Image (tube, rainbow, N blue to C red):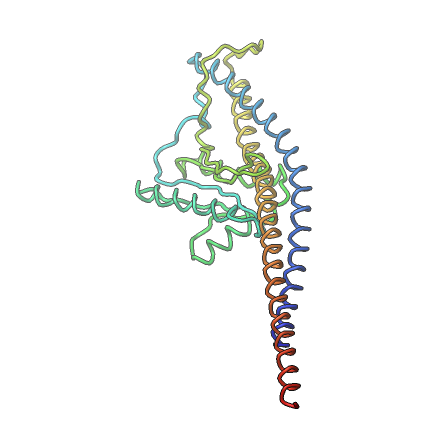
Length: 294
């Protein structure tokens, strides 16, 4: 019985230490989430503004036959090859954040295979890299550390490799998948077609005084703006994913802290019962000894 009590005390101590760790991790994630959320809000405004300007230019360009059709908007030849860019975290302990993204990518791979299309993976995040390497699935390109510390230059460099293959006709489209930030307690899976660019077919009137005239320089500016839009889409996905990661980890650590508390309470009850049984047993033995001496 003594050994049993000692084991229970060790378990309680271990659970309480774990609870302290998970509580600290929750506080850290909460602090990081506030910063990441603010960064995501600012970046989203910028991304929306680029999309708005690009949509306006595209609308005005499309009405004039003298402009060339930008390769960023025109589907290239059907090569039967699709590039999928996916973003996961470098670390775990964030619930289903990483595995949900991987599952979504695996679903897309299966769908494209059913369409007789080949999928090439460009992976950001240590967790996804480890998963695909373990399952012996080929990774065309990868980056570690970029999802933890988003950097515009590195993000642009990463996605421009996929852009170059698309513009040269090696691939038919580029898809991006990441688990995005919805609010403090929820994330949402985001699957977006990066190339050819979609969702710019706006027919409404614009209030700006932007004038577009057909010449080679304007064509060049249009392509440059489209390229900037694609680059920033990659950068925003990293920021959005980082905010979602902190949100998921905060929830996971909160649940772990609560579970540790419940386990500590149940172990404490078990310890008290075992201690009472030990005391009762000792009293019975003492009384038995006294009775036998009479």
